[in-house]
Length: 133
Image 1 (cartoon, rainbow, N blue to C red):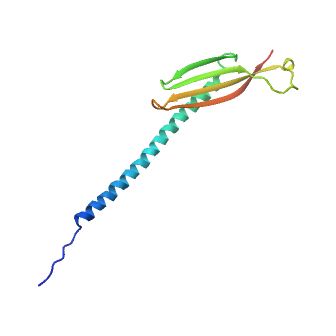
Image 2 (image 1 turned 30 degrees about the vertical axis):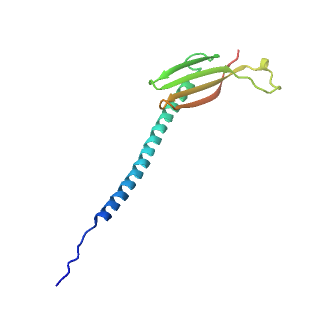
Image 3 (image 1 turned 45 degrees about the vertical axis):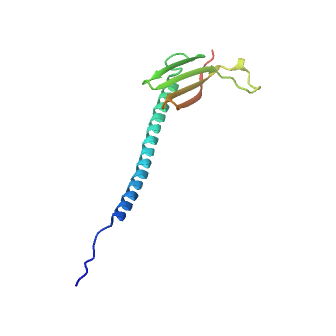
């Protein structure tokens, strides 16, 4: 009389295997979604930097450099502000009357809304020079 052994997996083994698979897939999807989110944030910052650099470059080139503020909106997403103010040395050894150039501090701020709760902002600041005469 021969005894036949059953071959295959029990229901418990199959349930445990599917549970491990589901847990692993959940972790992988979370990792990939985090990577996609990071890529989107990086894309937003890249666009903001390019906009700020463009605004910084054309300030004082398209029109004369003078004190004031200018603002606008780009691509219905990015709000920008350019602030131009006179720049003075803090050193007592420099006499402003003897300078032949005028210095202006130019600050460019680009901000955008990620969602209803989070806003992001990027800022560039430089000093530009114009003839003082």
